[in-house]
Length: 146
Image 1: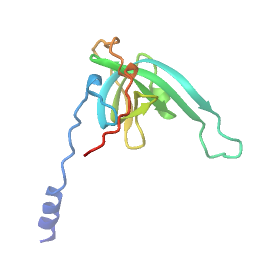
Image 2: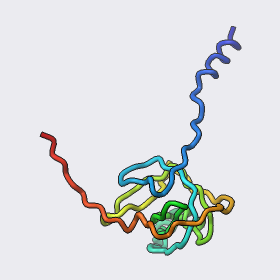
Image 3: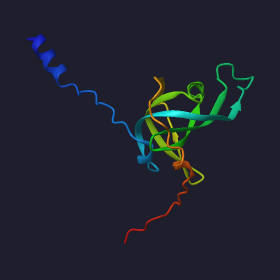
Image 4: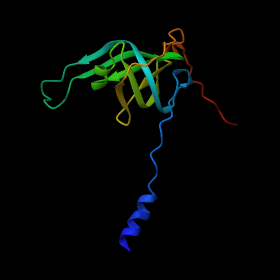
């Protein structure tokens, strides 16, 4: 009796969802859960804080702004710590569960602890470099409902 019951329970497990790959030109401010394949065009370290001498268990903080893109456009990706090592110019990466943050009115892509960045095989697309979504300025407009 127990074996048929456990088999029935296993059958009720939700199936893993296949990731839906997004293109860069589909990204919108304030959205999240994006999975995409992109090429890294450039990577500039903007913050490199060595760990304080009093905190032996803390790692140094490294933040880099990387221009990434696919065949529809480009966007600035904010890489943190271990992500910086993967985001080398020329690399192709799969970015999973990314979010779009706003920084000084423009979009930035980032991956927090719930997402992943992984290097993959070189992609066979040409990056559309003349459509940089991070150059589009957005203005926050408060909508008052009547």
